[in-house]
Amino acid sequence: MYLNKSVFRLGLFIALSMTLSTSAWAQTTHISSTATQTMLLELYTSEGCSSCPPADHWLSKFKQDSRLWQEIVPVAFHVDYWDYLGWRDRFAKAEYTQRQQHYQQQRAIRFVYTPGMVLNGREWRGWFDKQALPDPGKHQVGVLSAHINNDNTSVEFTPLQSHQQPLKLHVAWLGFDLESQVGGGENGGRSLNHDFVVLEMETHPSSVQKDTYRWQLANNTPDRKAQGIAMWVTELNDPTPIQTIGGWLQ
Image 1: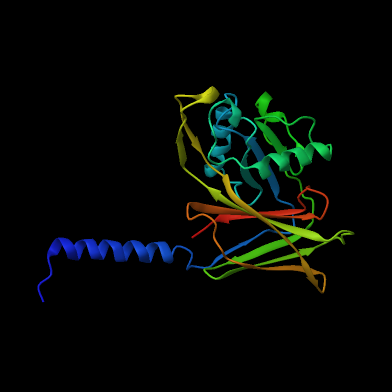
Image 2 (image 1 turned 60 degrees about the horizontal axis):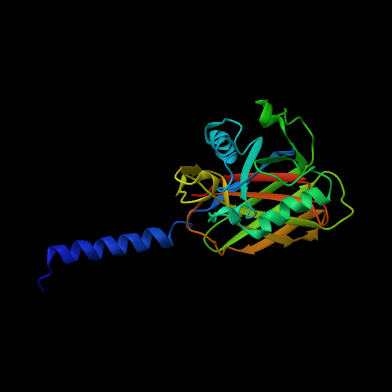
């Protein structure tokens, strides 16, 4: 049977594209902490805020930082309370605004504002004075690890101290090298670039077996643009991270 070369090439391209899209998560990813606490660095930002691009740019530098994933796990939460100025931030979610508000209710931060930094559950204003991040120290909290493959994700946390409250696992899917042409608001007309963007976030209660907390999650990847992942464990009613892990997705 004769097959036109152009049709053949198109069919081959489609087949290859489908293979790549369905096998993007086929390889198993394993990430693990040591017993020493890893710092979770949260940036609260918005494309509608003119003060935020420098903070976004600063956070992006951690892609080349030797401490990435081992000592520091950066995440960027885009909040929605600047959307009223005329530009809707496509990465913003009301639940990220609520997370920042929860920190204020817990007196972990003084005000809800952008750009706002939260380091290990506490407000960190050193960025405004061009300070370096504090040394993570050697606080021993326990080992958090995860196995991620195409079907499911298994997570375990073995703490070194007992906890009075049940623990929760937070999972954030991270996007990188994301660009927006902003058409309104305080950044109207600018091209903005983002990394460590929280595209989706999930929380899960834990089950305990012999002093080890375990989670078994269906791997319903919310966004194929996700290139990284961050996970951290907290007590039920306290947003302060106990232990954090993060890594690139293969």
